[in-house]
Length: 200
Image 1 (cartoon, rainbow, N blue to C red):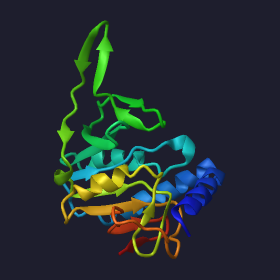
Image 2 (image 1 turned 90 degrees about the horizontal axis):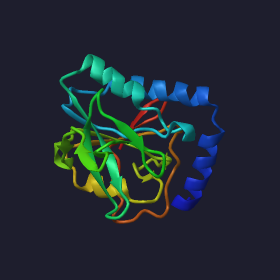
Image 3 (image 1 turned 90 degrees about the vertical axis):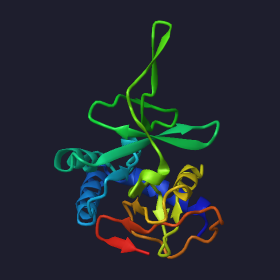
Image 4 (image 1 turned 60 degrees about the vertical axis):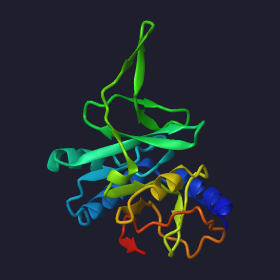
């Protein structure tokens, strides 16, 4: 199937999931992820649009803060003009605001009166990350994924170190094959579903 068809199909399937079932699957994914965390120091994750039934990464984040305080977690801020992501450390004190797509992002600058005030959040570079948790709508048995179509994560993952683990998080099992893969598509190293971990 093509990305367009898969995107349409899995958006509908995800929307049809009861919120309780989406949360149950997210918890199962997080539990499986913890069997694979081999002490990575720098972890990049996405923050979910919960009203769209994305995989809820907040339990993963809170568990890392609680059990692995020495690890650093980063999330992205999207620049629709440059079509690039900038990555900021996420801490319990990080202030968040939803962007135009409803994605929570760190507040990098806020205004107080007429003065812009920078909010303390360290910028992190793609080469720092040991693990990147990748959002997706669907993935296939070869490790290719279907996202929302902007290419932001492909450009980001292309800048990561070769040994950085790129792990998708999926509420659904893989499809057999995505037909219209492009040269710029960066494949995953693995993907976690509620039932199992798939390595490529």
